[in-house]
Length: 534
Image (cartoon, rainbow, N blue to C red; front, side, top):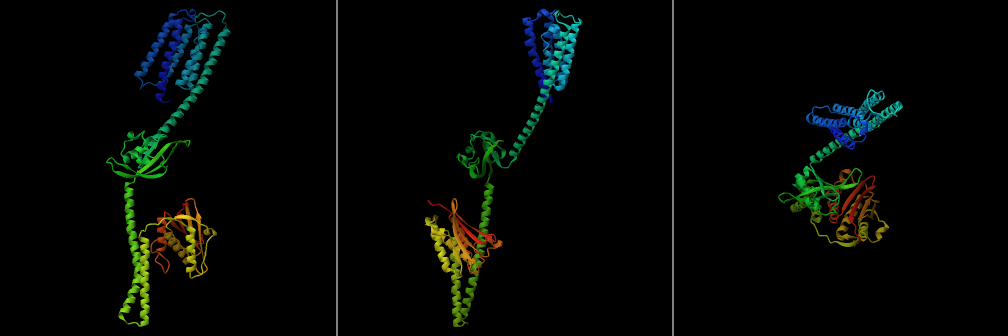
């Protein structure tokens, strides 16, 4: 038992003793109940005064020797003195006819509450010896106490047996309850200690986190605000407790803010805005019921700066890569053109050869013009002419052009659904160019007798247009590069067809994805576009 705990119990025992003496003995003395059985009534007055004096002595001992006293021994001494005092009280008030025999069980209960189960049986045994001995002295006339002449020896023995049985029964029950109570108290203390340690540990963890953390109650009032949150926002913890999060984070003023990852701006002490990223989620108790909201946030200033630097470097890298690709694409036709012109300038070729060289020069010029035209189409932003148009009609036109332009026997198939109308919003001219590029790409990927399928599928909020061929597919090394400008595996072509298609799709808030491999049975290019039939 902890020292502080037993100290409180011993102090409570002293107070209870004063209350019992005041309520029972003083009232007995004031109303003179049963005084005819007391041979010397003044003895009761001395006895009551002695008990008050004893209580004062106990209180002084606790006050002056609190740090040095053994409270367990002190409690035993007090309860034993109480038993002796109860025996004296019973002797004064008539022995077997005394009404104060019930005081012994009170002392046994005191032993159970203040000490332990073993102390209950010790006090019960001591009470039994004193009570049985007192009745024995009265029975055999050794103690000169007035008694009713009609009380027989059997009455003495039965009353001794009854009270002793009651003493031990009270000791057993109170001892059992005391032991159970002590175990429960100890378990609760241990759990309270563990809980306190866990709370402190959790607080240390939250306060040590580099991210800002705050929680709110169901009324959207801030209840916790960790150290990092104070450092990031510049608000003192006590200043924000009880406030609405919108007062600290303006972008949270809207009560319908989604519980998800969001970004916004707050202001530092100098009034300058800076970005923060925050994830909001529901705060739940152990039963899974919502009890508020939790927000974890970070200062994104450095991250945004790094992202801008990375983007800038990526742009320069892309420009360098693009320049190298353009130079590579232009170098070959320029070399052919230069060689043809030099041979024509030397005038050492026949007329027929000169015509051939001239045709080569013109062809290379056309090739140069095509490269520049495709590049300008890819690089120069053009305003979209958005309108509602029939997607299936546009695809049917592309299929017709593919069938008429293919020099090899390629079967282009489409489902019957393409005969029906499907209206979407977008720039029909640019999107038809996307479909044409992907259609030609699919035709070029298959050999004579190959098949190309073109079909659409409506999803929840977008439409998917698929161009599927049964060709050899794209290698794993090349599939990640197919949308790079000037990347191509064909002998002819600038490598801008797919990159241009992707760019136009992105301008329409869509994208182009590719699937290729043995499990796909060829290659599939899918154009995903927002779908709105209103």
